[in-house]
Length: 288
Image (tube, rainbow, N blue to C red; front, side, top):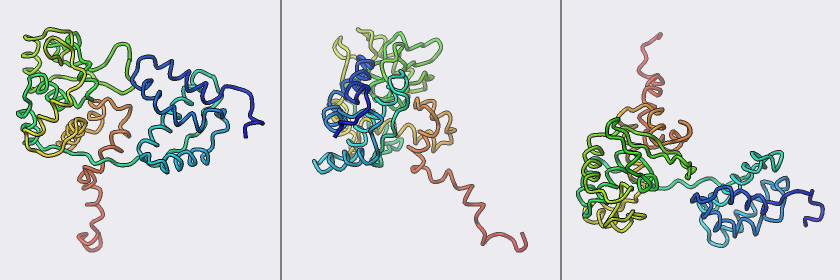
């Protein structure tokens, strides 16, 4: 099938080069898993041989094997990233277009203020309560909150720096001011701190709050909530209170406002109210 393939690095070669370049970043580990299926299908090809049809064949094969559309979307996204990296380092002249199925919309649970308070009150352990307070008060991702160290908490400036100096994550992170919830929570935690990490338990860094979070949700009685829903809650709350899209995008660490808009616009149809009010033709005065 590839007898007439042009000479050059294969997808498998470039995939592994990209994965090694990622180093210890979480994506490198994930690509170790997604690569098993992706390289079985694409590995022997060179980038210029990748077509929309080849990508669609992959999607059909994976979905026939019971793999969700969301997982296929992610797998082909890793292929896209690897090919763009290959172009960036000039291993190939141009990255091929990688077709992907439409990204499925996930149901986002948006908490109201009462539910958010109940969740905080339902946290049995101080480190779980602090983590929830930071997740809601910074709109940060869980990884950013668990990575946070005291040298990036500046009480004089009143800021929380969720960024890592070595750029160990490809997800955007922000430097944010403290608010009336996060500042006292951090001050109390610092007095009892035993490690460099803000979220700690028994003198050790915390790598997961899943069990504690599930227990807090149960005690709060607010129904099913995922950890990442706290980020969605923060984003939608800011937008619903009239915070400009540009500021919300900065808080979320998005690369541009288009990402923020595409993710959250469906939760805020009222932002188009002034536009449709102009279309109220029946109420226009005669001759206007």
